[in-house]
Amino acid sequence: MAISEQTIRKIAERARHLCEYCRSRSDFSLSRFTVEHIHPKKLGGTDSLSNLAWSCGNCNSHKAVAIQALDPATLLMTPLFHPRNQKWHDHFMWSEDELNIIGITLTGRATIERLQMNRQEAVNLRKLLIPAGLHPPDDTT
Image (cartoon, rainbow, N blue to C red; front, side, top):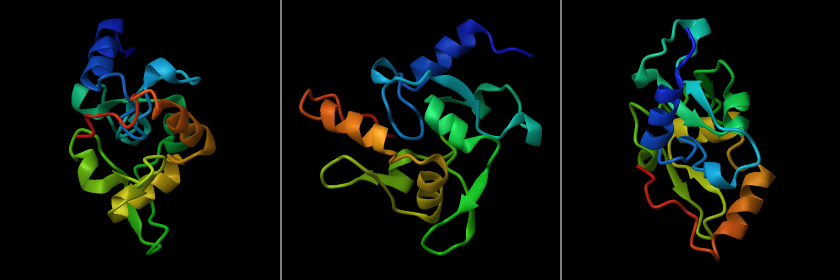
């Protein structure tokens, strides 16, 4: 079943038009934002609002159908961040210069690694948005 335009708008608004993973802003993104299935349909996920997230194209393509990944610090397989069930602050923080996302849990580190949340393009954009007061977002819940 296709996700309706109304549902897409609702998901984008719920996320305040920010990628629910890397916190990129959709109004300054070169990649298209999409509705992402947190638990992929291929693995039994549904189109329910509780399983859908607003995601930049980069995070979405790197996540693909993954629901877990290796934590680079411990090499333990761990679940990826779940934006509906977890709070961003509990797993991530901004570096002192606010350019990079730091994982503060196994889930945070594994998600950053799998989704490449500190890819150079994202860091470059953050660097440009900071002086304009547009980064970091103030709603990293």
